[in-house]
Amino acid sequence: MKLLPTLLLSGLVLAAGCHRDKVAEEAPSDVKVASDRVTIRPDSPKLGSLAVESAAPSQTASIRLNGRLAWDDSVTVRVFTPFAGRVIRILAEPGQAVKKGDPLATVASADYGQAQAEARRAAGDFALADRTLRRVRELLDHGAAPQKDVEAAEADYQRTQSELQRTQSRLAFYDGNTNSVDQVYILRSPLDGVVVEKNLNPGQEIRPDQMLAGTDRQAAPLFTVTDPSRLWILLDANEADLPFLSVGQKFTLRSRTVQGREFSGRLELISDFLDPASRTVKVRGSVDNAGRQLKAEMFVTAEIYSDGKSGGADVSARAVYLKGERHFVFVEEGQGIFARREVKAGPERNGKVLLIEGVQPGQRVVTDGSLLLEQLLQTPEGG
Image 1 (cartoon, helix red, strand yellow):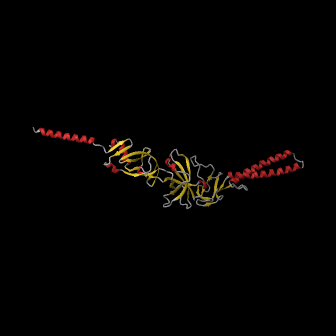
Image 2: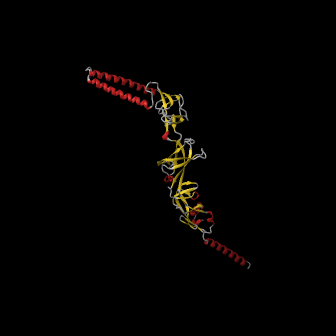
Image 3: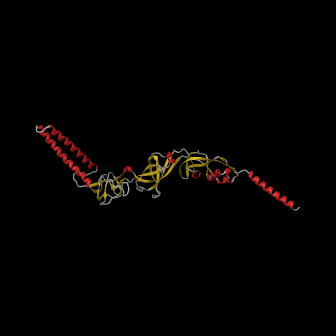
């Protein structure tokens, strides 16, 4: 008889446990998931993990690109020798200012001597042909020479005159000396500037087609002369940056080497194709370097301004996350209702990202907790 209360009590305990399980199963979840939308009940603690801000209209967009400095090719010349020979003397050193036509080095060259000899021989042949023509014409006037001799002399005169012009023009093109055959060629600066690079030594053998040892690449120039107060900046831009780039835009350049200084410049060229390896577009600008603080091959950062060109919305960089190769944000559509949106992200500046497509100014986006919402989307009914 004592077993009945014990069995009755056990049954009541089991019934109570089953009721609690049934109530737990029937209790509504605090998260609902439908397609790309997450709905969270107002009393859910998950809302405390989220932060929401309104997207602001983008008034001024800027693009920050990394690049390097290079000599401005419009005021730069890389000097090679037109004749094979041996360096006798070096007349200019790096850092030295030169004028157009100033000597940089002297080269003993048999090839140059051959060009001088050809010019001297052409001058002698022309002088002889000129005397012969005058003499034959005098004989013709006195009836002592036939007309065919005059015609032959005239043809010889024209031939030697053309050869003289050719040889003299060749030497004049290289600022050569036509008065002697000394076989000494003077390598001269083609423009005003500063010698910034020298790659030769006294006694060195040089030639026009000199290649780097063991390669098919031409050797470095003997001299580089440029105006160092003008530099180029070479940048790599992504496809997403292209809508905000145009020739003539101003930019501010900074270098970690020159602390506390900003340099101004303008974009001059945007390439018409993408590099197939890096999928970037080559962009070139010019920089004023009057103080000569910047140096060629220095790594720098350029901030390019594109006022009034965006027409998009600025949001916190924390709001945008990458999934695969696409960018997403969560937009608050109502109290506790968050929809995932794919966006086209532009450049980032000062912790803000420009959204070109997907979000309009004034819409509220999740700035903290986007990854939590993404995780809830992947779990049926939010887990």
